[in-house]
Length: 242
Ligand SMILES: Cc1cc2nc3c(=O)[nH]c(=O)nc-3n(C[C@H](O)[C@H](O)[C@H](O)COP(=O)(O)O)c2cc1C
Image (cartoon, rainbow, N blue to C red; front, side, top):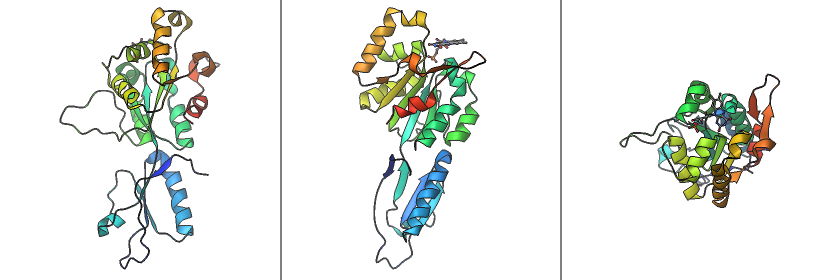
């Protein structure tokens, strides 16, 4: 079954139309190509015509050309706010789990996290640029809006700054804005025991929870790999978006 998070953004029917137009225009990003084709196949089976195109492609041949509004079916989109804790080097696991659950992802990394990861790898996986720095005032936002935020891994530094309302990285700015917009936010802190005893930690967790952030238990999601490195149970993180 396709994920339940696909949204039909506008609807119209071509029944009775004289000029051949497409019934459904299905756009997708790289990670969701298979879902888009799956949906197209079922629609064609049901007697509709479809156009399946990559998200940034032109809409030639769609209903839009004939002046009719095309039907666009798009998956819900998660912003992955990635900060500089060791699991960030295995972030592809999170992107895979999000895709499996029917989410399109855009990665926003803190400057420190960006230095730890291969941003081109994540751009290829998501179809969107990895954002690190704020855009210039006259630049368009290169990312489409988010339906939800997954802050993972989330450092002591960034979670305390978010609770305090600081926005000195793009990642913090988007996270803080999402709080105000009351978007669903799942946060996966990766913080060692000594720092969890710092007075700011408990207060920040309580503040963010009170704002509706779904703050996961670091011990419940951390996985120590045989080589000693730390990763997260990415599926458990994504399951919390349900
Ligand atoms: C090897 C290494 C491992 C780190 N692990 C963690 C960690 O697990 N959790 C954490 O909160 N900070 C960790 N830090 C510290 C953060 O990277 C540091 O506080 C950084 O400024 C966080 O920046 P950011 O929150 O903007 O990504 C680690 C640093 C290094 C060099």
